[in-house]
Image (cartoon, rainbow, N blue to C red; front, side, top):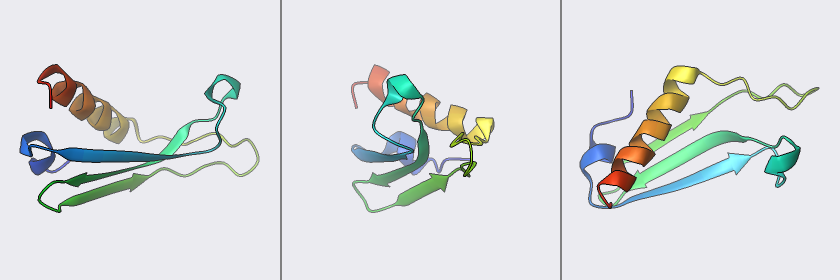
Length: 77
């Protein structure tokens, strides 16, 4: 799902877009972008319900993003 280069690159920059700035009031990430040191890009955006502002996550993609972050963190990358 997420290209292998994001697991093996020495550096990965990660950015998010959120529905607002107040996580304690329910604002959530709806997009994640990542770039490796070598210039490979990955971007995912989930739909947001315009009435409720609830993010409609694809859980497989969300879990893969979280797993990548934890794996890199555990290895000190």
